[in-house]
Length: 106
Image (cartoon, rainbow, N blue to C red):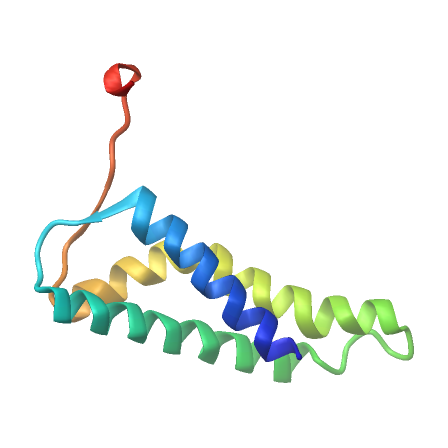
């Protein structure tokens, strides 16, 4: 069940980051899709390593086991998604820039 949470969180946060906050300036649609899939692979990889490393923490308490085994392994790669995402997109040849919003936009 934890994997399902991680997968759902990735696609929601990726839509916000790469659909609203960052803009792809270069790269073909194929490279952008490849970058998104590689970001997904990195996110799931970080989640898996953290889940294995932190899953045993919390002892017999169900709440603490859930926090250390699910919440923390999902939260850390989610917070790093913008920075890791830019790096992964650069590796496939896509330049991502942060959008600039102004008061005159409306």
